Length: 338
Image (cartoon, rainbow, N blue to C red; front, side):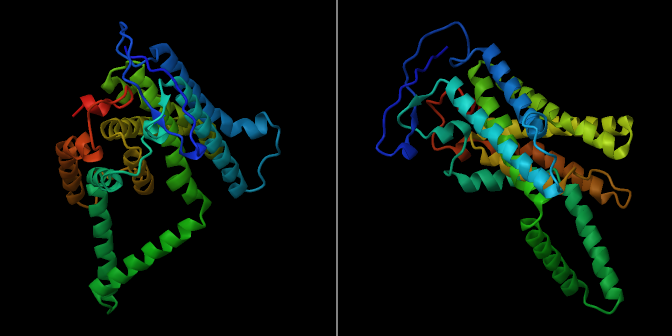
């Protein structure tokens, strides 16, 4: 086991203070990087609990009055999620075997600007294959709409294109002022990826856990963090059975997606990869696999799934996202996973 010792070197500009790691090591009987497995698990559990519990802190702990509107309710939650994310980042930096000196601290969490286009394009391409059935269904609906326009004496192709462009522009412009869109496509993906991927995965990897164990272990805490919606759904539907069904499905889906997002983070070492996949999936929702409308949707879904499996490792090759894949720290497992 390698132990890295923290050393702070003052910088003329504290904002540019960086992190470095020595090659000095102490041989130990474990397989980790200076973090015990128990400490890693406890820290990850605490972060998951904090992420959910802090959402209720303003009312239950601070005794603030309930929000007077849905917008103020979400803004309060945005602030709570930001606080828990920052707290997790700080705690993670104190637990991990980090030294100050040469590399940016943000790189520990996969927050990087290098190889940014690869971290956006390749994961989006890979993720979109799982939505092949969804895209075919949307295309068929678009063609039907165009045929209706054609039946009314209007041009099929031109009007259809105009409608699509107009609807797209309207949806994008409405998102800027829609507080729910900010939650679904910015705050939730960013804070969840920071806590459940950028913080937890390095801790578990440095704790000596097997790579695939980390990929499938992290999503458990990620999915359980969504159990807080159970009471909300029960109050809305008036049925605990219906609420349990919805939340159970949601937990199962988040386990699957969380495993995929964890896989992307470990393979690429780039937080942008799971982040863009998270936003993409939040936008399109659950992939359409089967449709009573036509078998083409099922065929496209199967073809997309096969393409996804075929390209999963090639499009997430560590060499595509990193200048070098040797001399990595304990939290950069992609060096030994090429």
